[in-house]
Length: 148
Image (tube, rainbow, N blue to C red; front, side):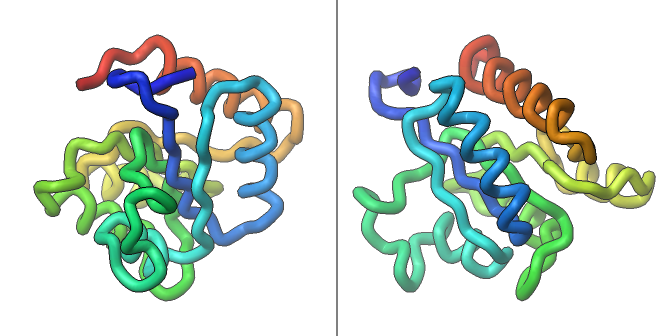
């Protein structure tokens, strides 16, 4: 699959749980939903990647993502703070952010949408359901959804 201008689709996955990250990456790759997935394991690294700081200064190895998958419970910088920074930074505010978390708490959902999350998905516990969610997510955001 390719981006709107013919280049590869890039997803930034900001997820501290290695098992969840592996499921997401494997699910996308198995179904050829994306060409490139970048994974960072804490909120600070996610912001560094998006702001091109520290080890992420090279746009060739750290391309601007077409979609961000963001966990809420992250070390160093909380996911809600990462979301707030993304959506308040003009250069990256139009990148869709899908919160992908285990939290079903109404407060978390409300806070995510208050900070302009594009979608809020709760990670299913069962492997089959988690895989199905990744399939649906990939097809919606990268194939069916029109973006500029």
